[in-house]
Length: 79
Image (tube, rainbow, N blue to C red; front, side):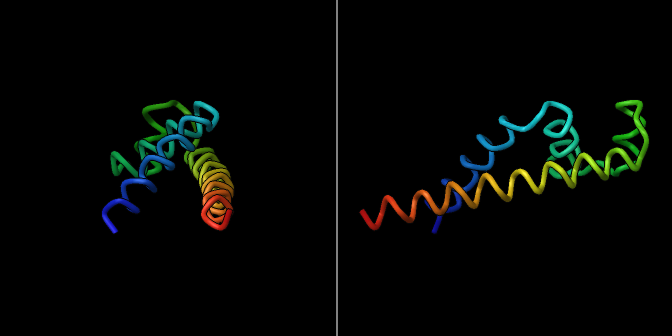
């Protein structure tokens, strides 16, 4: 189980790197640094709503990327 969590963490890190810079930055500020939308908006000089949009886009792209990676791994195991 520990190996699975470590593998997922590595996949997530790779997927975050592939995001557009601002989406990755906002995602990390919120989820890794536990910053509020308002604080992120103030730091980056953008609107609070824009923070929400960027986080939503990042999450959607990460879901898609991680799902594709997991499906690819399942296919490799079957082969």
